Length: 171
Image 1: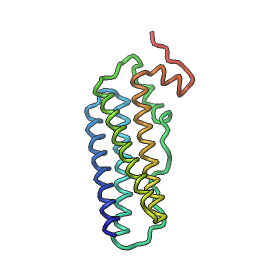
Image 2: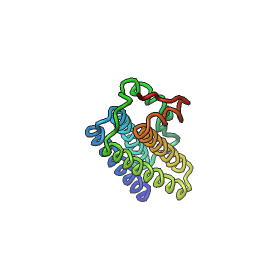
Image 3: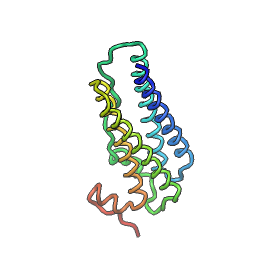
Image 4: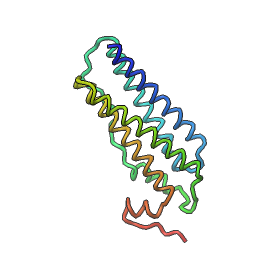
């Protein structure tokens, strides 16, 4: 049981570090869309922290764990971007530090996904396996959200063409 709790403590620490990073980025980033994405990621990391603590508590109390729902819906960058895109000046070129912040976020999410996937492979417990795989899946979604944001900020016309099948006319 101690090993399980130690693993969950490490997971909580990783999620807290991600939340702190995204919170700082949300304050510093100049681009409105990037700011909104980082604010969303703070919420998502908060949710992971709550759920991991819930599992930690149940294991500490030797309670049976049947199910833990991480999130109600899967991320879709098109839907998340929809409202923000209406407010954005399409001609604004992102600051290099904004793009660097997104790349670092992608690195963090990739590291988290790899960590949870490894934990899922190492356990024989069916609940733990599902829980870690669900976390890995959500970390992959976070990565893709950051990747989509990065691609959008780098080249909005190409992003619109790939996502919407339309081009963005910039004169």
